[in-house]
Length: 231
Image (cartoon, rainbow, N blue to C red; front, side, top):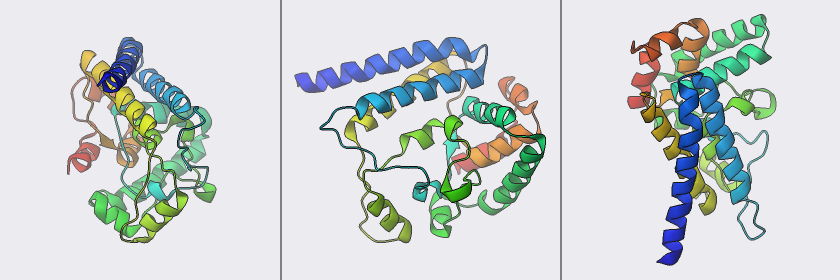
């Protein structure tokens, strides 16, 4: 019982820390707030896998089997991705990405998670060699997913019955705590923690930079993406 109590106290400490660090930033710069939550999860990732006896994720650059499903993100995270792209892409590259996201939206927005996985449609943000082109700015849901076996991921992707993806328990608990702290911070600031389809919401943000301001004012600027996240 004491071990369980210690784990609960550790998780609550992470929740409170993330909540306290993220909440003040949301009113000033929602994108920066999302980045802070991402940094917090990265810190817990390093801490959770630092022990010599800990299971280690087998994930590496170019391993993208898990990047063939809908990825959900909060609006502050979408804004963080858009800001990252504005800093790192030329106007021509952004225009090409918008066109790619538009084509992708037509393919995937009416698909369920299971249908998209079965169709093996990769994320539109994957780049050369299966590498994530927004890796530094990827949402919490993308950061959270991991596996200790590439073989199991490959088998699951290929449709083998009984494929089991093994994860790191310490990291799973840390992920839950960070996400809960982030959700609490959003609630404190009067924002919704609901998920939006990353590709579709990002397309909205890139096509209409003012959409973010309208969303903050209560207008459902990202309704197209939200409907798919709910459905």
